[in-house]
Image (cartoon, rainbow over all chains, first blue to last red; front, side, top):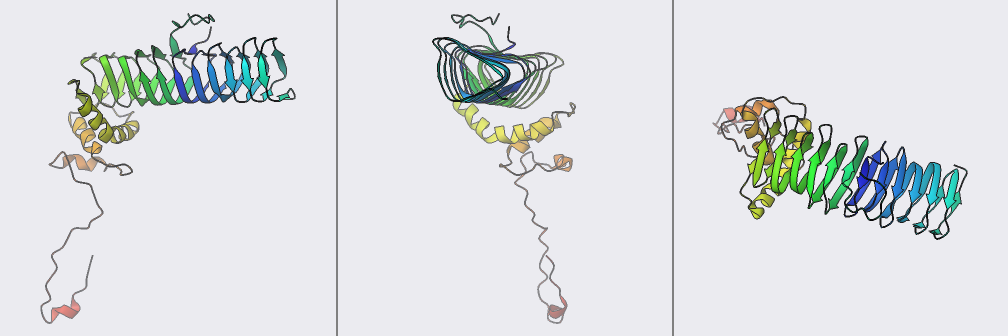
Length: 104
Length: 202
């Protein structure tokens, strides 16, 4: 249960930095850097680089994903950008374009 | 509350205590701020600022409920409530207002609901007020002169620094812009012999 929620009608144009879990249902443009997990819900649109320990995508992300723990692209997600994560899961039905680097 | 249901457009948006958002935020729903928000905020719903929340932004919402700190202008279509732990440095534009005892507030209040006036005031004063405001966040409540000082600072244009405390003793509340103009001393008219000796100063 995330304590920071960007609701479906909210548009953030800037950066989000913090320690808490982040749940994005709306739109974020800029940069996201969170210590814990980031979940991009289906319907959400993120045009930002995302940095977190765990990143889960069900919506749309245009930007690089850097996860220190794992990155998870669920069915229905659309990701355009590079993924840097030691563990990665791309589900059937996910749409992805970019490079994957699991060395980080 | 904010569980992962994709149908849940009713989930309340919030900025958690360890999170800082810098930039412009806009939305059609309610927002609860427990962390920091810097930039600008336009909501059509209700804004709630928790006791440890800090907003350094001009805010516009349907209603604004403050238990934390806001540095910036607050515009509400319905009501603004400042609780006892609230600290607000900035102007309030709202048809209804509640300031609880214990709240700390410095700024102008406009309850007329006149949008054009409020925008004009905001345009001229928001920079001045919020800039000086951030420096004075730690200032304790003094006497009523503080409000005059804030208004005066609103007259400064961008980049100008307000003068230090000594200026509050000036007679007029609206001091003209300070320039580094030395006092104009009456030029001593040349008087024959003294002309050559007179050394110019200035």
